[in-house]
Image (cartoon, rainbow, N blue to C red; front, side, top):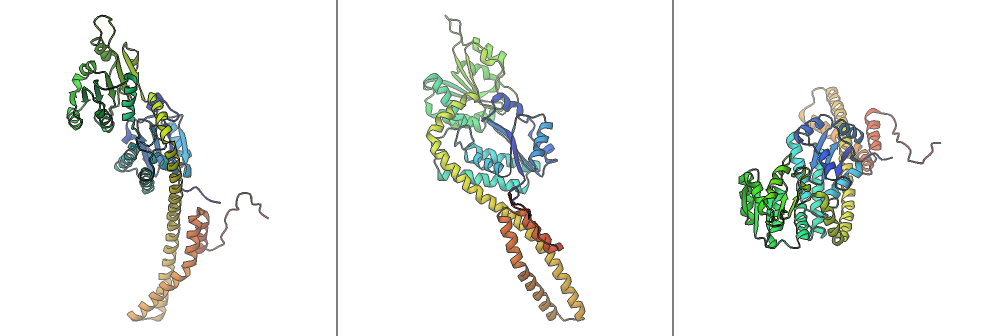
Length: 428
């Protein structure tokens, strides 16, 4: 009988089963406070929050994680443990689980989740090992397959959505709200669209200036946001603000300034909100002339890209499976090392005790004699443990940690080795 490979559990929601509202409801606004609270319950905790998923990764028991999240007021989440959790983590880094299959941003997001946990003091050595392995697999998949060839990020998918709605972006005026990683991705995707003007607005004006200089756009102060909304054909908003930055009442006023002189209706505005939490206040889509799109609308873009990347995703899945087996064996070897360390600590204590007894019986033994006896006891102990160490390592590497621990207990405490019968075996 084999035991679970590791006490790892992952719980959360993602674009696979949750819409924007469900993701927003599940999200943890104060990440350090959450990590601090969870860190008191689990040996290690990471929080991964992106625009498409919110997942809690712990070194601990799945049932305990379920209870903890329930007490945090969360529900409707999936829960994975052991091998399934590890497979999910590696698949995630490979880009297989992403809304935009093959996107590269997930690797940086995993690294950030680990860095945040390290800063909060909740990153156990085991979780560090798991995340580093996942990142290694993610990089390996992209080197060995073409899963990210021509792949679009969420940011560039938003640009494709705008282009599909307008037919072309050539000659258009576009405003990007937010100058973080997502804002950069959006701006880079827009650079090849032959725009008449690209504006960049950010709550911190200096950051807007930096991004605008990179892409040849115009930095906009946040106090001028609605003026530039009035001037733009498309607004793509992707800030990290914990609350809406585009408000319904102000947007309605801005749309009045876009009215056609004769018809009285405002010139249409494509407004794409890819922030999580959302940047655009609820109800804004009902304003005359506003065509509001959210992350939910990008699912169709993913379906289109999947058609061209399905074969590469299959190759990536196979690679993930191979790497998972290797990683599990690595974890088993770690388990074997723990068992062997316990055995060697016990054996060393016995050796030193018996060596000292022998030297005491010899009386005033000189240094040479003491050295010979010490060497003799070391060699004997090593030889005696050789076969036992090999057996313990073999059991652990096959995932049978209970048998490995039983061997150690039999050697250190006496008794017989008793292991549970295999499933289906009937005791005689």
